[in-house]
Length: 123
Image (cartoon, rainbow, N blue to C red):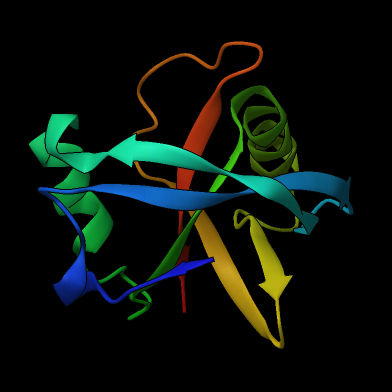
């Protein structure tokens, strides 16, 4: 995980965000395995509104704690399952010993095969 806080978001930088892959999904939580590669992300080229949404405190009081990159299509499929499930509306994962809410940093672009999506980790 690329660790950060909402006040230290690299909005004008290019950073290497660790890639993860979705191993399993039980309907509420993803089991993630870290890939050996990192994805280079130029946050200066991102939509300012998306970055502002990423760094704001979530309604539950959760704040941004890190970033990861996931396969865009796989993450979209997992989110679709969560949104159609009647028991939960949250998609999360355990990294280390902590559970994080997963939210796409810029979720407006349609997912395309082979592309990665930057995902914010909230606690």
